[in-house]
Length: 602
Image 1 (cartoon, rainbow, N blue to C red):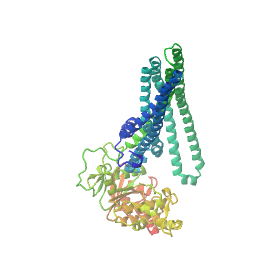
Image 2: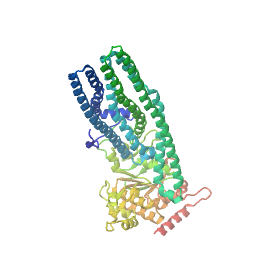
Image 3: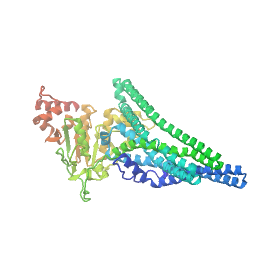
Image 4: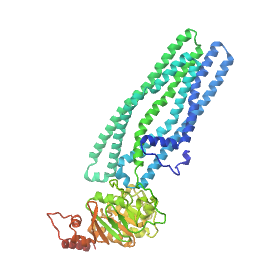
């Protein structure tokens, strides 16, 4: 796989049983790139390992005054230098390719999982952790994949050096063959402590990132209450904790690096001292001593790869574990039978867990006393089973389990609009350019969502568009708009999509009563032949619904029109009118207030 071929047509199905298994799976996916990097690494490292032989031959040729052997040594050094240069260049190219392609594969897997889960992802995993996984963790995982082949080439080279020295000069070769493994494994006892310190650093960094994300997302609110300095102080404290943890971790890695310098130096001193005695006794020649000395000195280059792979694995394993945890999240339940292709998912929407039924073609309103329960119910209606549901029961559409449908089919028939929808940056035309049935035009959707004032504001704010609101750019997440304006534009986007089933979670919570009544009428009119489910507690919306379902303690306990439930169901009346036991309200009074409010809004 080359960088120019990215992105992958299919990034594959990862092994997410653990972080280590995920890393191994990534390595298997890039076996070809790893082999290329290994071969170029061998050329590079073996070229370096061969330099002592050329230097030794040259020194001995000078001692023996042998011009022919000196010329041969010169040619050998030129060949080895060329091999080192070519191997170094190509090793870098292939290693960086492995890094980038591995990171790209992980990012594609995360993007696919994000698209699959949608807003459910941030309910199951903290937003800061998602950011950390998709940025820093991806780079650390790519680093380990990139370092793996270079480490393998260095390990093979050290084995070749040890064996070669034992054959070339047994007396000194045995000393080197014993000392090199000790040098390579000397840092292993320190790795667990270094890993723990690195984990603490990453944990604190993740919390700081999450705090920064939350602060930026709520900056508008913070300014309104004067809380910028408070949260800025919290972030300063969190960043200082990250700095302290980073310094604490760096000290351990500095100790490991120092060991990797000191121990080879001690081995080199031992070889020189012992070799000098052998040379003085006439048991070895000067050229042989120079060869062994040079070989031991150059092993430091290969040994650095042992330190790097240890550090890369220590950093990447927790990152891989977090990535695997995110990638293990599933939209679907475990099924043994595929959905019959002839069965079409259409008809009533039914949730066996709560007993909620939304008949096809009707406007059904759902009232929940707890907003969190309403949010989880909206997720379930969109085909995301609740994690707390031990039976993993699926919502049925026309008798077909939604979570057994392919993702593309499920998204086509059911669309869930979250209570806090996100507007992407771009023009208004781009915002409304979504996969749709084509039955609802953008103008109709904007009118139904009562976006006239939003269009006027965008037209006035437009520069160089001739007052065309559709060509006006919307800032990131729609921050230049009010909460009600963002909510209505998101509603218009959902109406344009025109799914068979539209689930809206508090679609008018940020608008005034007059606008809310108009939006409710627009939804009912535009969706009159489609199945619409609205989770809300506003009387203006509830009175527009064909039927209202009360969900109490996780179960659908009452069904009827808004006025029927208001008159005959105390639990419903308590949620809708916010009355308490000390402040009883009669059904006639509540109905009268509703009529008065409707008259005022009209």
